[in-house]
Amino acid sequence: MRPLDAKARGAGSLPAMSAQRKKPRGQGGGPRPVAAYIGVLTRELAGLARADGCELLSYLLELAALEAEVKGGVPEGERLS
Image (cartoon, rainbow, N blue to C red; front, side, top):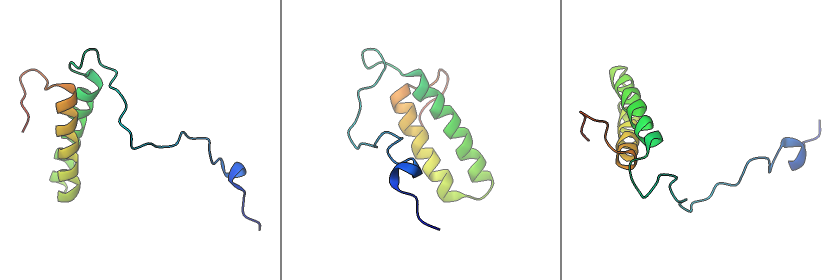
């Protein structure tokens, strides 16, 4: 069996990842609703991971939630923790 060449494997079909930061899509640097939504979801996932004993995963998800909440703004009635 001969290996597939890069074109046959689909190489190059996905955009190259870049370490450069892209400009946010929000207006005027204000709260970003998608980031806020991701913050809420990752906080819930962190709670599930913690309840199942996955401490490292829980910690990483909490970090992701904090980053998302900083970018997206904190939902009303909640605070960064």
